[in-house]
Image (cartoon, rainbow, N blue to C red; front, side, top):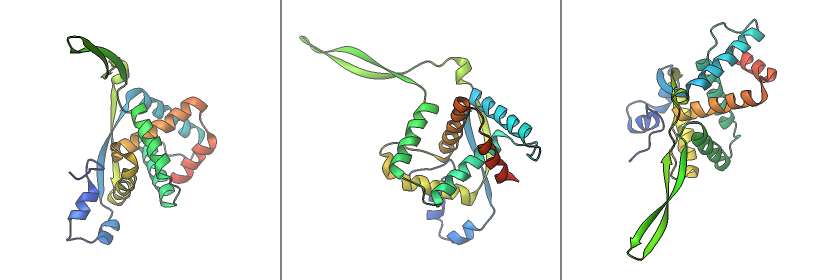
Length: 205
């Protein structure tokens, strides 16, 4: 079964389409829309950051949003990859760890005593999902407009990364969420960084 690296699976689409050349594809301005799910509190935390950003810089667009922030983080990440700033083994570890940290429901291990035969019992370790409080399980659903060529670049990165992921799988939508949630975690821990905010401003003005 062919892997899908986004809800659009652009890489497989291009590999199976012999009619149009890859160069034709890369130089088109076609857009697609992808859907991102975030914990609702983290979405609200991002809104506060965006408001702080607009309050700090008069020249910042008054419409700057969480969607804009996520797009900048994603494209900057891909630019770092393009420059060769990639150690795939450590990158895969970072992404998988943060996928389970930010996106997967928490699990707890339990040990269950099971009878093997009439005289023998053994302990089995099982995992079960922990019930999440309703206020923590609410999700924000965001729609992001993305160029085909950016989506393709992201899928190619995930394809290159896949040998280091072993049995884990990642999609573009999860990559967007992980990069954003890791950024917000740093903001919550250390507060707003003016240099980072200025770098964001330079990207959009």
